[in-house]
Image 1 (tube, one colour):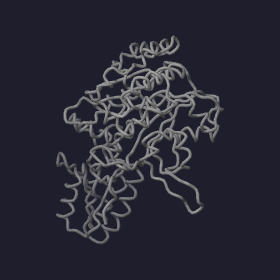
Image 2 (cartoon, rainbow, N blue to C red):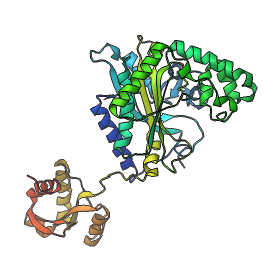
Image 3 (tube, rainbow, N blue to C red):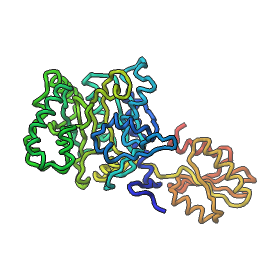
Length: 425
């Protein structure tokens, strides 16, 4: 038996990197006052049809959808925004006194697509959503959080790319200009773009197949269709980023193809050599209409999402070594039947005292137990023998210095806690 195609096992030795990254992301969210939300792994299919959009590749081609025993259409979540917004509406978080509602999530998502490096059918996504504010400063905050997360993990080859999609009027004017521009070339476009031209022409600009078509080079820019309000909003977002010292690049062809996106859209790209052909690390933007589509009050939002898999790839491409603590605090070596019985009790007591400890479970001889302690990179080894048990004493060895001392059994926990804390009282 093998794992299904497009999935992977995260084994010890690698899972520690995941844990470190996830803790760092959670810590940053705590500093920015974003609270964790955990939603179901599967939802009613209609949520994603509404929340992601019928015209998207995700809904049309990539969702894992099935009918449950009650005849309901159920889908494994392909992304986190729709579920977060559904929970926001269902649990009336919009009625809480502290607004905007600032949330983060982390968990597995599922998309049926061709597996490739950094693209799996089950992947882990981290994302944030800030719901209930139209202030341009929160757009800058969201982008700042994303950049801060990557930088604190050690990435340097980053580019923040942003654009404005404008308000509804600006987008409608731009969409019509795109239709007028691409219609004469309709038959030259891929089959998907021929459909997109009628349903969501913005997504033509994001097509990987037609990106080198000559008509792409002089396609109408959304920046030429921004009305005064949209232009002012965009200028304020840029000004806030400037105040924060965050560098960015404007790309008029950057679009988020969902109907409810408006104003700010952004992606963070990796410039690291060897990262791969797909350089996008994360993407996000501001949206209107999504909360209303799911049954809530008129509420705007902004968020972004990143793949943990691609984040780890970027760290590897830049040669970033995460500071993973691999040493074991203490290993207990026991010699004799009474010592083995005492080791069970001592192991439990040390763990209750907050010491990371392990012992032999294979009845190995003393030499084999010390080898096991070496393989686990134990900082200290506690040696228990039947004679020592009778004297209520143990031997504690510092594996780095080789220094060894005898201690009463009841003092071992406090001694180790003090030594592991750096010898401080």
